[in-house]
Length: 483
Ligand code: NAI
Image 1 (cartoon, helix red, strand yellow):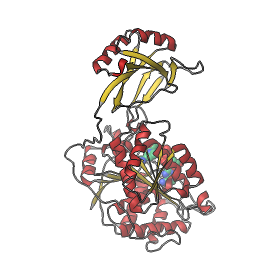
Image 2 (cartoon, rainbow, N blue to C red):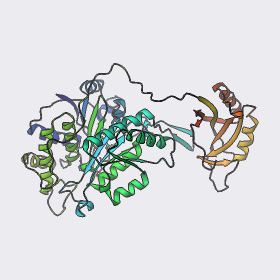
Image 3 (cartoon, rainbow, N blue to C red):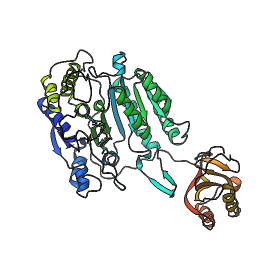
Image 4 (spheres, rainbow, N blue to C red):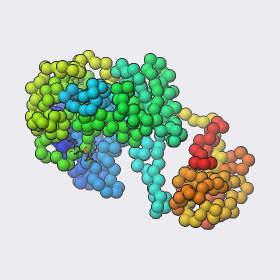
């Protein structure tokens, strides 16, 4: 069995070499194809941070084990880590956070055990990086949450929770504010929950979730979330179990999966030989289990836990009154402890893990359409215009252009209604959203909207427009604050 390996930048090669030497000492029957990815590949002129040969190998082998990689700073360069996850549709980011005996935290000292798996949607949300300056003062980011994308990751989370024997699965969200985007994610969650009656499915608003995780982390089991919120909450969870040095991550897709540590390239300690390889090793153990090497995974993990329990530590964690070891010594200690088991938290060989290798070649892109409306009409348009005038002046100009088909119903600024009613205390920026609704409820055509736009550009710069859709009698847009 062969997998692609990219050592990464900064401490990447040091910790990857450590992990691969542990695999080799345990006779893990894997072959590695080392591929070219990382900062130095950007520097060679490959704008996505990987060579075409690396991309071809990864697509052929289906598994990438990668060290952390640096994204060159500056505009126009996208993160290679995000590009890899998105290009290969590794839609579920799974991060497991467990109490590790020997890694002291406030919770381990208080005897509160932690075993939380965060499943974060990995493709959508603001991570599309679709951003525009609408005026010199106003930047806009588009946040995509889709039904098929949400269903994919939520289904994965439920399936994983069930196989893991979890008692509870929680959806973290902000649907009280983002009613359409997070609302859609939450709706998908409860739709999938119906298929898993044995699991207790509930939801928590993300701010409350953050607080509860810090106060009572042991009440959570599996938590599924959208991309950005999941990113933040998973780092919070890393903090609960001792920091990023103990946080493994798997990016799971139907065809390609990527295993990596959560932390970055640690430029401050790169090349010193003192980095902690634990997070990458834990990610590697996820990889071994994914490929069916359960016995190797259990032996290595028990040796790691035993080593931690003995107080062996790299400089970034543990009891500071005891001397630390370097990466090579830490690695040798783990290898020397093969066959030993920790006093607390021993890992069994035959675990109930659900991942299985599902590499199959694709000939073309998969189109995912899950739902279409039967009765669809356009009932208006939001026109985003640039203007440094007051809202009354903007409204006066808009009203001249509405003609017979449209009525101006509201003008908002940063999502807060300022016309026809508003407050003098609302600060304004030079960009308004003017909402025009179709007169009479019969709907309008896209040509009608272009005609309206043509009239409006006589007075304003139109930055962008959004259609106001109505599907099966339901509004497919949000109301402005105060509308
Ligand atoms: P970082 O995670 O590299 O470092 C944060 C702090 O944690 C530093 O003090 C570092 O020394 C320490 N640290 C991290 N991993 C460690 C380890 N294994 N052993 C001991 N100490 C460790 O985060 P930072 O500084 O924000 O990012 C540095 C670079 O890494 C950036 O270019 C960033 O884009 C990249 N990065 C890459 C990721 C990936 O490849 N998946 C993820 C996060 C960041």
